[in-house]
Image (tube, rainbow, N blue to C red; front, top):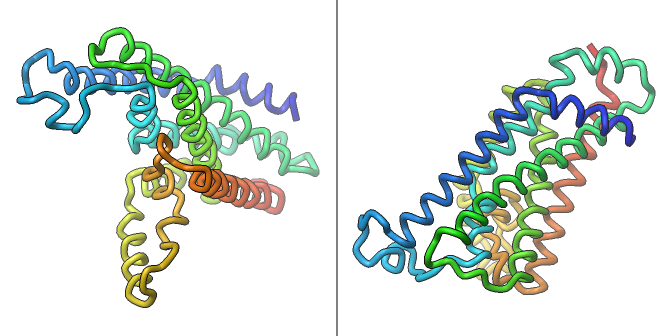
Length: 266
């Protein structure tokens, strides 16, 4: 398994797509910093009342940077494209036919490939968030660090969500055996296109059940991730979020392993 991961990481670091997405991640981090700088400090005097009137806040904390960078559909799209391109490269380049086709336990290759994708996503997250956090701390006048423990907790929870999302994107790429299919599925999830269906299911639930304890949207991972209050969540909410992440990751990877093991290699 370790050798498989090393092989995948070697291919990842030598792929042009990896460096392109790394550059996009860096540019996105600069854009997020620039947007915060404009709204908080208003150096161009564009807003009356500044960020207090626009955002209802008078400073940026370390936890706010987690929300701006990680709890964002744009960064989901960037990482989804990375996972999809990386996961699909084996089929495109003949890796499945040349290596997986002659092994008995094909599912091991799927696990190694996903773990390698997680390592790549982790590196991109650290790169992008580190740049945005550092620039915000240095150049935004209204920046306040806040609690380091709170930043670590928020970052850890959102990172866990990203790992689960990578498993979901990985599954769709494995299912469709195509980067096009994986990217379309990831865009549908990342852009919130499923929100309309989730809201309709919520309305139907409320119509038939008065004051329901749970709504269908609570169990859709895109909604759970984008609406999760990582800064103020209590123990029960955190455990619920962790459970949802674990369920989606396990189901997605289990299905990917099953597909790889049973599918004919062409």
